[in-house]
Image (cartoon, rainbow, N blue to C red; front, side, top):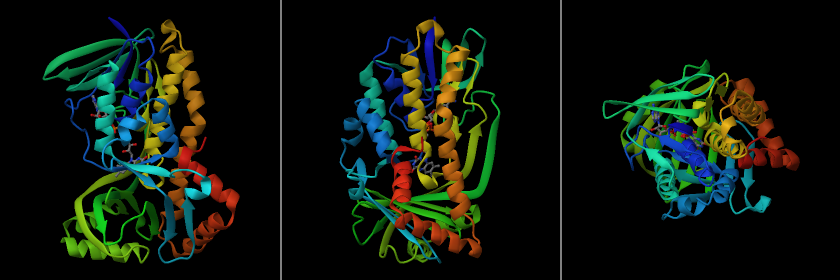
Length: 385
Ligand SMILES: Cc1cc2nc3c(=O)[nH]c(=O)nc-3n(C[C@H](O)[C@H](O)[C@H](O)COP(=O)(O)OP(=O)(O)OC[C@H]3O[C@@H](n4cnc5c(N)ncnc54)[C@H](O)[C@@H]3O)c2cc1C
């Protein structure tokens, strides 16, 4: 049977794409290597932008995402500063007449809410399917994989690859290794967070503390060696090292749990479309988490692709001209997200004393010039298109 769409990977981006298509007439199947109800990743704190909330509201899934106790923590303000230099910016939701600048949600809680929404939607989702490759002809794509050791195969007009790495297709990619890792953990402090997120640029790289439930989600950028040392430290010594690196903006680090690290790289597909194939989310572009852009960009990929598919007559699904049109429409948003993140690291990531002054100036100007601050806040809220 010729399907209209096979979605490879029902992670947050693949699931959002499927849900955005649930009211259409398309024959869809979503495949995931995870067992039903399982999570592909260790947990992590995701920063959802206000724009992503609007997409989830439009798809009728925000209620589900936000329904658990402490499932979603609103970010009332973002405090940006640098260690060892002047300059400080505070972005406040109230200044923009918004309920929140964004929301912190755990990857697992989000995945489980999207899984429930998918189960109710009637969309076919097949778990325990490890897709091994996607091949294409001008007329259709073939998606091959294994389920419990058995070969399985689907034929489709279009394969949307949302596997988080683009590993199932042979397309040229570019990779910039930041030679850094993100150490992530849950951190409790003696004072309540009151919804304030912190981004602190230090000579070693940025440290982010995201308010989440009764604690902070920590993302601490460091060299792999330093991160490994930090992971192995006893709890008290780790908290003391965090206090030293973070400086006085937060006092009273009291407890830490779940220290792990992830390699940080910019990993991009040269092209997001190919014959009968489209890449979305991290499969198209995996960004450094410093600016919280990657996940939100992926959700916009899914939403925009769904709008394109809903407007496409069935026989033209996956046609070259249609895919090229989609890629053209995504180009500005995609490249703005990539350059904003990479540029922020260029200005704030390097350890050069000569950069402290311009960095301080950038932060001070950002705070002092309302239009610039508004533009920056808008970028954090909605992305950069
Ligand atoms: C430390 C860290 C912190 C981050 N913090 C933030 C943040 O604060 N804000 C932000 O915007 N982003 C953040 N990100 C990025 C964010 O995690 C990703 O943008 C997001 O997970 C991408 O979703 P996705 O659905 O594209 O891919 P994934 O989440 O990787 O999901 C891929 C899915 O595909 C399935 N799959 C994979 N391979 C196969 C296969 N061969 N066959 C079948 N199924 C397959 C997996 O089981 C999984 O369900 C962070 C990343 C890191 C590393």
